[in-house]
Image (cartoon, rainbow over all chains, first blue to last red; front, side):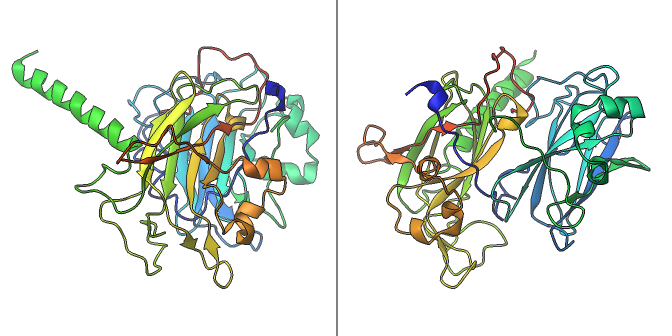
Length: 187
Length: 204
């Protein structure tokens, strides 16, 4: 059997009992909240009926402020200096999650900056991928192959909304206003 | 460095080693031996081209031998084992291998429908070298009579893919008078990208 014949191991739901296993101290603080350039990315996870999902887990993957995609390890025991670009936040009883991080820069000059998010939840057979785009000008938006491929009516579900401390990004798992979720080739 | 801080440093190193050992051996996280069938679970994490996924985080969580989770959401009348919490973490080595020592979990009643029992399983969380390879899944044990009755196991409709969720008993991993052994390899969604020496930021 050639390597190309390898079938990927299927994903299975994260279930309701991950809280004591996956979250860890400092998981959602990519940078310390008090830092001068720290912003908050937060939001609510909602199910098809619009009810909050109290047992979801969100993971954040992002570029640093200069648009560089970090490759550094060290997220499990953060040293307070290295920006790993990765974090994890479980939703609370109200379905809310929050990260402390920095404003991501554009990965390609002139492109629209975004947060990449992975969503896990009880009842979801497998994880979902999405993106929270920061406000960008028309040129940057239209230069983005993903944004320009999504019909305008649904594009708003990919928009991070500025607020007092950073951005708000709600995630609707299904139903009206369902967030656009992404699939990737060979995934 | 004076002798006190030197002592503190070596103590810290010892403590760190103990923590690393405890993270991959779920049977030594408390003062006594947990109840149940001690076993080794090991295997390799591979990408879609069969290459080892090196130095990436593997996280597991599971019920105890009686099928009870240490979680406020599990209140079914099976005993909590004071010597078993059921969480583990390790990094894959340069061969892509991970290894845990743990207790075989019991089946778990999950109220999805009347008399609903999950087959014994261990939850696994895995990272690849790019974020699209991120996966959370469950490992099962061979020949479980609950497979046919479990909607979560059955939610994978391709039988070839479903079979990949089941570990195999490996007698070479069993240790006399100590533990049984199971082998479970995991294939992450593929990439044909040439890997670099760098890994993603999503590791420890």
